[in-house]
Image 1: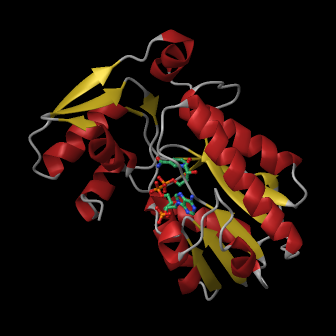
Image 2: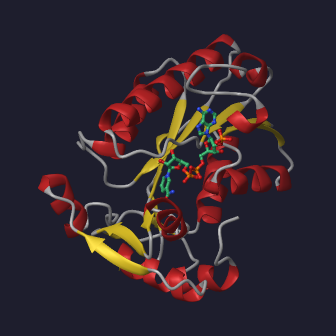
Length: 250
Ligand SMILES: NC(=O)c1ccc[n+]([C@@H]2O[C@H](COP(=O)([O-])OP(=O)(O)OC[C@H]3O[C@@H](n4cnc5c(N)ncnc54)[C@H](OP(=O)(O)O)[C@@H]3O)[C@@H](O)[C@H]2O)c1
């Protein structure tokens, strides 16, 4: 199959590209670094030609509701329009466990993305996953201030990005499913603890500041709204196993 991977250079996108190619698919990688932009629409029409499915694992790094909603709305609208023009029969998107009803910050953008995919013109599959093990490394990259890493107080059950990628490739190769079964990691944990373990494993001497986010959304994070329900599929690799294999994000 010919699979377009939007966000091909990202944390999960790199695994999607590698695993799709290993499974024998014809992979079309798409990102700004290869000349396509899902937010402006640049280069999308050419990338879609002959595609059997598009896997959207693009991202925007923001805590602003306006930026998150605007970016995911434009990206999804542009992708779906280009896919419809090229008669692509299947759109696959990756979202996040437990974000129902969130109206602020980054998660509001993901809710908007989900809404557009489900209401859109194309047959679709939406996989919700928990935060990746790699999320600990992403937080260190994105929220370090001097010797501190500022980490929101939140509980989750992180999953290996490689296992999420495997699920996305399998879903893209099959028929459109609508909402797929949620995918979570094997263990529940406080994210600040995971970041501490990541810092220790990678020999970094930064200190973790666990910060409760004010308001109802912050309380939901602390109470475990992102932890999956009992019906979720479970990845196999634990955070400690991931740390042994891949402690640094390149
Ligand atoms: N990280 C997690 O823990 C986690 C957990 C569950 C679900 N998710 C979801 O998984 C998706 C991917 O997350 P990630 O952490 O792998 O993202 P990431 O590492 O930030 O990578 C984002 C990818 O999107 C590309 N991209 C960004 N803006 C683009 C644009 N305007 N046009 C085209 N490509 C663009 C980036 O490449 P360029 O910069 O070269 O454009 C990169 O390939 C997100 O939708 C996220 O919500 C993430």
